Length: 231
Image (cartoon, rainbow, N blue to C red):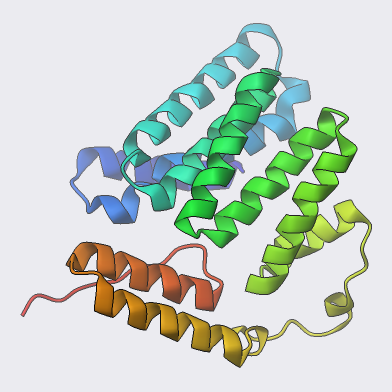
């Protein structure tokens, strides 16, 4: 996590010193907040008193900035909400944590961000499990498992499967290529969806965003970019 934070802090410095297109950089603070959260969790035993409070304050400030910067970007705001939920869970402020988890899950469902939705369900399950709400945790993990399996997110698929005590048949095989992971029917459904957007959305920016989102769903990607060339 320290190496990740080092690179992300360099990216933050560049972001604050320059003017970049927001859609390509707006999720930077969410990624940075999550890296600090995971570092804090891995080294929390070593942190005491004022040092611990200082680290939590830093995480809180980054989470707040992430929420503010992504407020107008529903494709990225869900990640910011999830990071805030994880922060409040760290602070044992369970009511606030649950509120942010529920907001993140609801927004990602609405926005069709299936990978981020599954991440929210995975983290929410961990939160519920720590709150001794085992049945609800398993429900969240089961839904996350189904999504990770559908989009081919092998790393988190295996993590959730272990939490549920499930042995995956896929683990005995070689990891399939992206082309092999998705069925022809899913590609056809995505094509139909894109065709519907082309015929119904007049705003170019909104249309391009929908097309990129659909391409990411087909590829099982976490991030996607569309670079336009001026003629």
